[in-house]
Length: 235
Image 1 (cartoon, rainbow, N blue to C red):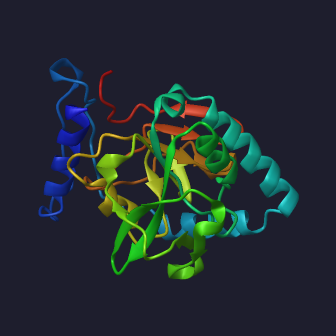
Image 2: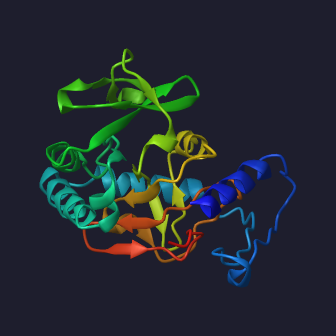
């Protein structure tokens, strides 16, 4: 996982180079990275976010349940899930794909399960053994109680990441708060990163991204599983 950690170090370093508009990374001849050009295109992330949030909120309960179940079953079929001893999930908000089936399956399989909690401007993960342990927290989203032990990103083998939109290279649009980006910059984080969403949240076009944005390794929806062509370490 050294290459992925090296990439995250580079992305963290880029936060101090705000004037950069085009960055080249090593190509495949020198390692597992593909050559990529990162342009600050000024594309309307805000418009795309608003459009997809509105569409997601308009889902009927029946459609949300069916899509969530199919997406979770797809994720449960992954070898990365089967091999993981510790997984990090999220509590859904605003019709995000549900994760309760993943929680139940993981606990039955004897896996440790972590959920995020927001502490000020940072996000931590805490262990959850029952769905009832989640209580309404920051932004009205259920999260583990504040008395739990904080866990860092390097403790999870697989992290399931929510998003408003994903492209086929693994880049995502979140809510704009940056909680996951900051959390995933932990230098020792080597977890498989899996974006989970409804299929209409996947866009064929490229989402504009900055050097500090961390791409997903896999994107799972109710209709398909995408192994991205982004910066993925060699196995």
